[in-house]
Length: 348
Ligand code: KG4
Ligand code: ZN
Image (cartoon, rainbow, N blue to C red; front, top):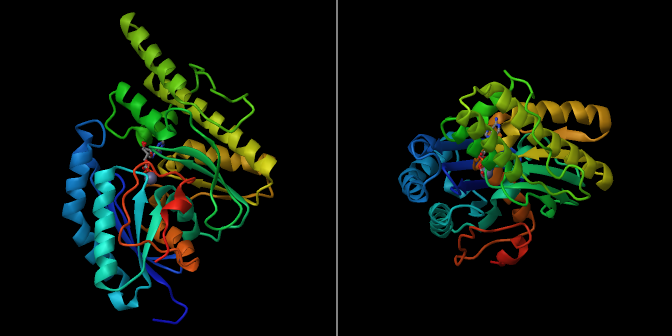
C-alpha cells in the first residue's frame, strides 16, 4: 500500500440493496458490489422490512468477500470500515452496522458512521471533484431535500418536502397504473412517449421558500384515474405519466435553480434514486445552460444514482480526514437527519 493511499471498506444496507465497496481516497471505486432484493419485494408492491433484513443477513458476508476480492486488497491494507447508520429501515440498517462493527473489531480498524443522504451527495465525488459552496438536490424514494454545503461534511437543509418524497409519489402513482414496484423508471419511460395534456398543478412553485409538496399532485392524479374509470372513459397512460412527470420536474428544477442563484453556489449536484430520471436530467442540463452557465452541474451516472456502498465510502473519507470515528456502541438511527448528524458521532 502506498503511504498516501486511504482504503475504506464501506457497507450499505439501509433499504433493499445489500452493498459493499472498497473506495480509495474517497474518489476511486476499487469495487462496488450491489445485491438487489427488488424481485423479492415486487409482489408485495413495496419493501417489506422483515424480508429486507433476512436478505441482508443472507447476502452480507458474500458481498464483503466479493468486494475485497474484486478490489484485490487484504484487511491489513484498509484504513477504516464505514457503514450507513441511518436514515432507513432499522432492521436492515442493523445488519450493516453489526457487520461493520465486527470487521472493525476483528481487524483493529476505525469505524465510521455515515448518513445515507450524505452518501448520495458524495456519489458525485466518485466522478468529479466537488467545489464549494454547492447546492445538492437530493431526490430519492424516502427524501426530497435541497442541501447547501459550505464545505466538506457541512450539510444544511434549506428546503424539503412537506409530505411525500418525489420517488415515493412516483411509486404510488405507478401502483395506480398497475406497474410493478418501484414504478419510477417505467413512468419516466412512458412519459417520453406521451405529452403533458392533463396539466396537473405545480405545487408550491410560487411560494417564497424552497420546500416541496407532492401529495396534492398524487391525489389529483389518482382522482383523475378513478373518475375516468367510473365514467367508463379511457385514459392515455403515456400522457398521464408525461403530465405527472412535467409537474414534478418543473417544480424541482425551478425551485432548485432559484435557490442556486440566490445562494451563489459554484456547483449544483443532483443525487439519489430519482436522479436517474431522464426527464429531470435533461431539463436540469438545459435550464442550467440558459440560466446559470457559470455554475457546474454534476449528475451521477445511472449506476451511482441508486443505493450503493461506494457512495458511503466516498462520504466516509471526509469523516476519516476529520478523525470522526464511531464507537462500538454505534446504533442504527432510522430517522437520522442532517441536523442530528454531528451529535451521533463520538470520538473513538
Ligand atoms: O435512492 P434510492 O435508490 O432509495 C432510497 O434511498 O430511497 O431511490 C429509489 C427511488 C424509488 O422511488 C424509484 O422509483 C426512484 O428512486 N427511481 C426513479 C427512477 N429510477 C428510480 N424515479 C423516477 N424516474 C426514474 N428513472
Ligand atoms: Zn438512497
